[in-house]
Length: 225
Length: 295
Ligand code: SF4
Ligand code: SF4
Ligand code: SF4
Ligand code: FES
Ligand code: FES
Image (cartoon, rainbow over all chains, first blue to last red; front, side, top):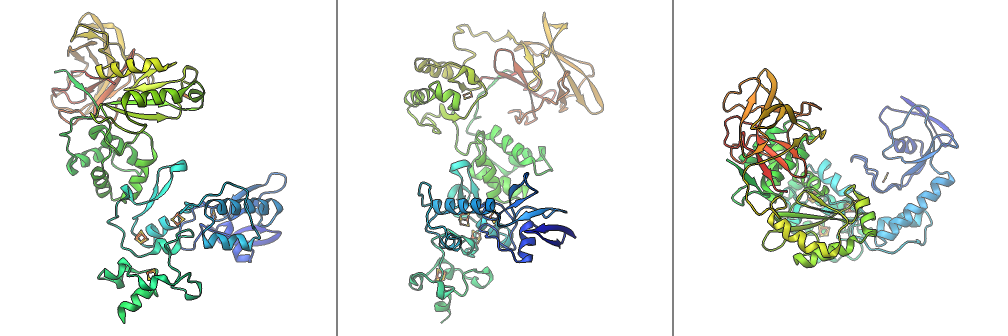
């Protein structure tokens, strides 16, 4: 067991836990975006920043990737953390304002405007889909290409991947993907337009074995009927 | 026989699983081997084709998307066929300030292509790089391994012409088949020239050779085109030996294969520019002979 202090509260967690897990165990809220249980931590979005160490030598680290250490002192809501977190949210809003997930995070933290050049990216490079596809769907069909400002997400050579089996897992986890249908949770549905579409998956034979993440899917239900 | 190796090798170099398997076998093992494998594939086929990457994925049991991500991350890997001559113009900060953009656009105009494109006749590929570590000499460009400094727009047309002729031959009217070379270690830069042992009236090239349990010196003629060799131990025909620098003891090995027998080639750098590669298999027609890489 590892003993550490979070917001002044002493706690002990199992070896190998992250600071995020320790804080959540105590019930301290830390917003996350690129973190998802069941997927390897990736540390891309920086939304989960916390402050560690004793003043004046404190630093900001991403709690989802930072391992809990013996004697570590963590603050999850210091003024430095709040300021940095607000900045991260503004940057997210600047790159992908149309994302419902990001909008929700911004509104939960009372961020109503951002001060950067407005872009409308389709992807914030959070890597959720890549990890989903590789770690949970065991497909490894999609990944990052290029680097720097040319980094993008997709299949090798931009051709249809042999490995992909249209499970929809990537779209299911994507915080930015506008293709993602929300009708599987009717109260969150945007327009319900998908009810009139026939997605590629229904033409696949072994649909049942595909572990589709869209279930319950309107198209499937129509197909069964 | 002397062979001039111009890259990429002939188009008849078909990508087959067997040939790629061979490259992989040379770098067997650790995860770190991937870059070496890709370097090997690129050295042999000139670029990384979709087919080649697919075979690498299959043979190494890794997912294609991981391999593609690596291939696509590094500047030195090319996913498109490259021309015979590679022009890399530095657009790093120092070179930018000294006028690199004008040099780039001059190259673009003279070659009729844009950056990252290859001319239709497959002669030239134009790339930009972000600092060649020679900032004080900017603007800098590297063409086929030769550095050109303090470039002016007016230099470009001549460079294009000389590159096509081959820099080692440009301005050299007679075709002299035998000429002396001074070579050294590509890793520590120490000279291999041994003036205590003459061959053909010239200091010999001395390296260390190792095969089986034998480990000793190996000397050869420094006259390019002559194949006289002396070795502490006689190397049986058809043995692939390892060669080492006598100064830094690094193994002299790169990612090239002998185009005749596929054994690894032993690289050496030539004073004044260029590299020489010899086949590591004794008795191979590429053996004893020098490979002059005109880059
Ligand atoms: S649909 Fe499934 S298999 Fe295809 S890329 Fe997305 S997660 Fe991977
Ligand atoms: S496509 Fe979506 S899930 Fe994948 S990296 Fe981009 S934003 Fe993240
Ligand atoms: S019809 Fe089904 S699969 Fe298609 S978008 Fe709607 S919920 Fe998703
Ligand atoms: S949730 Fe930790 S960096 Fe994204
Ligand atoms: S910036 Fe061109 S060599 Fe450094």
